Image (cartoon, rainbow, N blue to C red):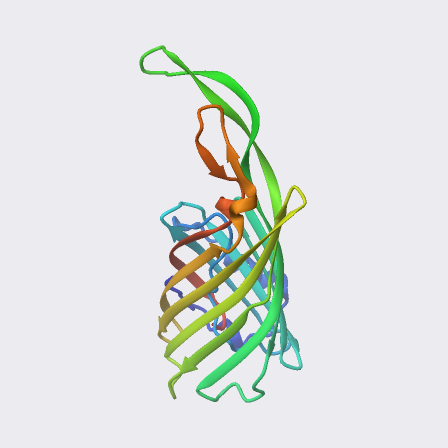
Length: 242
């Protein structure tokens, strides 16, 4: 995930809508099936401060964006969205002095991701090039809820132009009255102060998806909630405080 803080927005106190215009910047970047990325340090924004990002993930192409807003008293709220997922979150810092090199925070997020679920029905699909047809399963898109309780940590040098950051979080989702538990983790490094370049690796792994295995007409097994889980590399651009 590489991050770009071009406008030094962390010190601005302009109306929110004015700064949100900066976030509508077309970028050809990548993303995952659920916003498993962190793209933030453990620092919490000051009251009234807005920070935003646009980003993308590899290997699955899916542009995304997000906004963070400082509530004061070491609290902030956030919103992230991609083509097939949305998330709102709350974060609270454990250390009042945000100039210290080590920062730690925690909170919770509530979101949903859209996954492709087999219906049990089949239809013939024509092959455009050869004019043939084959029997394929009919699938439908469904929203699956996801809740996380993340712990954020970050290390900052004295000039705050190099940041090592990470996050770990247990996750919970549910499909067809069957709870599914998982584990999410992130690790990234950021360079720069006003212009910040970052790269972040993320992992979201299931812990008990055996209950959600589906076997189709041809005997192939599919884990129906698997697309909520992913791994990859995040690239992004941040406008505001990291």
